[in-house]
Length: 143
Image (tube, rainbow, N blue to C red; front, side, top):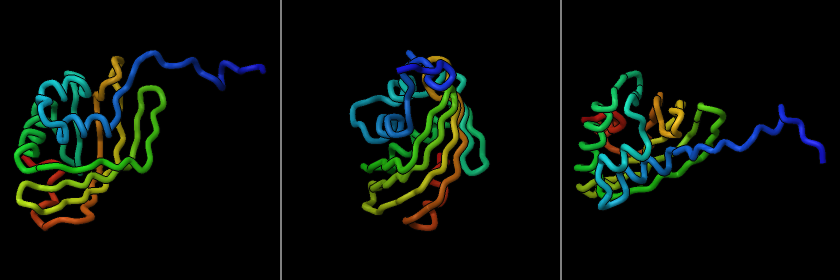
């Protein structure tokens, strides 16, 4: 079989993260520290825009610290995912059970960029609350 190097690029030797692994480590893996989870999946110069609001890595980690106090468990369901070169896109639903027993379901449309080491350098996302109280509308960026 003949292959065209333009159609069949060589395998990328860098192992890249993805949203499922990152969210599972950040919020759903007891015993894994925030620093360990963040260092696995997010570059030092990481920044994120959620529903139009930018956060640097420190602000993002403050958000995750807050979520760790209100989230008791949950699941991540990835519906669509694409990674090409240093670009990443996905659509996923996060279902969270909060410590008060209530449930929040959020659908997320995400575009990202990988750092050369395979961690996320930038994520821009829009969230849609599918289930939850009015005060849960900012769960994607609450601190």
